[in-house]
Image 1 (tube, rainbow over the protein chains, first blue to last red):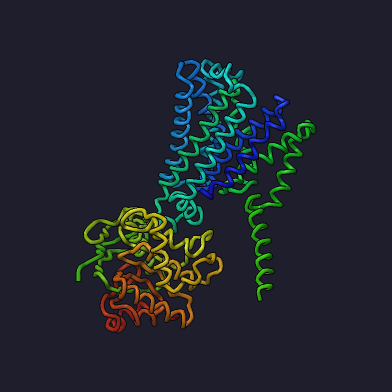
Image 2: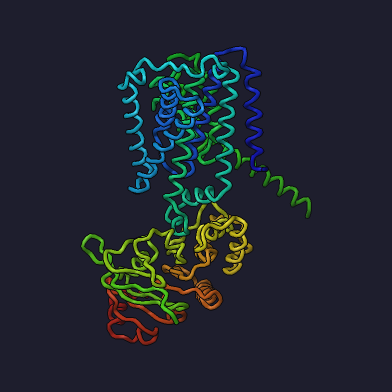
Length: 322
Length: 246
């Protein structure tokens, strides 16, 4: 239970955000998007941070979830809950398939990246091409969810906070189980892990399935709370690059790294809105500056700092004792 | 004594070049077998095919009568075959204890162990190799000799039946060498683990091995008791001819 304390504290902090932003629907929207990206980042961290599978299709898998949920609910008329479950399932199967192929063909990080990037681009074209079903370039208005509290800024924010907390708990529980031990071992040294008896392929596929399911579910919820999705909602440029930056910045493989990364970059994004056209340039410079400063991510940097301080204090107490 | 491992006509080709060419031998339960030979003789390849890191081109390997070749390394580990590599591969993000816990948790023939059970076994294994007092240290602080002992502990924590050691005595000083010889002997004597051991350090081989297998260019040159094998003229020629430093 003690291992869930950091999550409870994070949840409490994030739960206070509406108190401060709720007078502006626009800002609440940005805050919700921040949580959406936090959810993406946690899922991506599970796949890439834990098992070194570079999935460059975070947006596309969320899109699989988003479009599946919207189409099943609106066109087929399935209940929302069922649509959500099936959407998560569709994304999980898609991502699990990539893991399976990568494992079977022993693809390394780069090749996994290339294949999943190709999927991202193909998915984008599929959305644009299947106009009847997806609305093509115009996007898709989602009716399901309209008129419910899902469309009100503050409740929608708490729905996403619930998703983020659930994902963190899942991540933590995995970390503390056999699965977490296997992840650590295969991340350190794949061959040594296999020799020690770890079924590396199986744990890779687990991560691919669970992480992709998380992405799909987040995308599906977003379709219902936002009421509108389009190809660019889930595009590589809009989602993947930002998620990658957030996770690496926050600290790959750590519990709270994705939360911290997503928060920091959401705030930076918001602050830079005033800079207009120069925003991308400034964003790029900020990213470079941060990466030079925190090579292994923010969370490990903070942990090292805390340990150093604790070590110094321990040493001082030690000398006093003598 | 009953036959534990059977290697029958093992052949491994890299491109057209045979690294192993029709190697056939058996290992009895509880035996310490040393595999020696000049550089490039196929010793490590032989060990890797048993451990599942390389696939045989032809031939077969079986453990207590059931087929081992073609299985992935983790399956072979679950059959009770543990391997310690020449270059230690400890998990760098873990402490010594965690390394051993992992070995117990995933390496047992009886399936996944709970963390509590794994910790008990890890403690035993660390104690066995004399690393109990270093259990909480990160592996980055270990030297080569200690890393190999740690890997041995990780292997033993899974209670293996057969231990494959790949040149684990290379680059050690005299005291470390003696400790290593002692520990391998104890592993066999106390735990009853069978050992197949590839080695260049002849002093250790003559001291510890009960039987020697000599490989040269992937074929078996000789097999038998250490003293007899080392008097074999063909062995002397192959050995001293290409590797006088041994």
